[in-house]
Length: 337
Ligand code: NAD
Image (cartoon, rainbow, N blue to C red; front, top):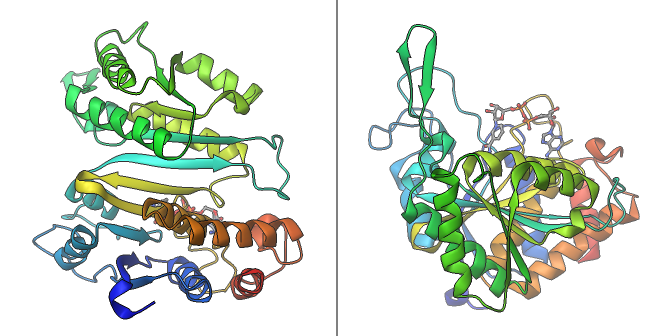
């Protein structure tokens, strides 16, 4: 491909194991001949007054301009007077939906081998609006905010995702029997959007029942959409079904079509710099980024190579019970490509 055909994407290698697993992605993209040119941005060492965080204005501009990016884990420096890095990204880029594909990895045995579902979490409001206060001594209050605008936006994305990814069903997860106003509004918005997608089956499942169904038989679900707090919990539950946060990809969708893919795990300071980290979660996140860009061919090839390498079992990192280094595992994937 010529220079002009290259798609520019922002890359935040991040902290701790971030740079090591980001290197692995870069190598694999090169071998797979992915037409992406990375624009690398690092977390600064000083607070940028324009963002009030260690993330620079330029790095946010890069994501806004490219509309697509990949993010390694970031460790927010401790101290006062700045915003957390992840919060800065979420607010500044208006990342309103968190999408996590959860599918069984062939060859990596868990209690379930037929998981194939997508959780879509509203990411800007609900119980996480940060509106908590003390009413009087001994009584505190937390406001759960649900708006029509944010609910429609995430519901629209869920159905759009289902349609464009050949999915059959969208389940809205709620507790509207108790939270009649808030979850009631969320459901109303989902129903409105569902009417525009008659080809997709729509259902509503109460969150407690949903948890029971998920652990009994995850194959009952396809695409799940839900408010913030439920999404936080259910998406981790689903990650657990397929082997944990070290394997789970995710992608954040923002205003104006921004997609920022990221691994779900943290910076793993205990193994950082030792060539021991498992790059799978970041790699599979990069695959969701490629799918967002409609580069399905490249996405399939890389996903297959990663899954084959894990299934083969010859090269696995320590967290999956193996003895391989990050670079040996990466090389094995490249060989499969
Ligand atoms: P963590 O996910 O970094 O580590 C938990 C355990 O999982 C550790 O034992 C670690 O070695 C292991 N682990 C995680 N990812 C792994 C990988 N790819 N390969 C092999 N092993 C892996 O969680 P933590 O220790 O609670 O957090 C460490 C730092 O990361 C904190 O500063 C936290 O704020 C930050 N963090 C960032 C994000 C993010 O950027 N999205 C998410 C969570 C935590």
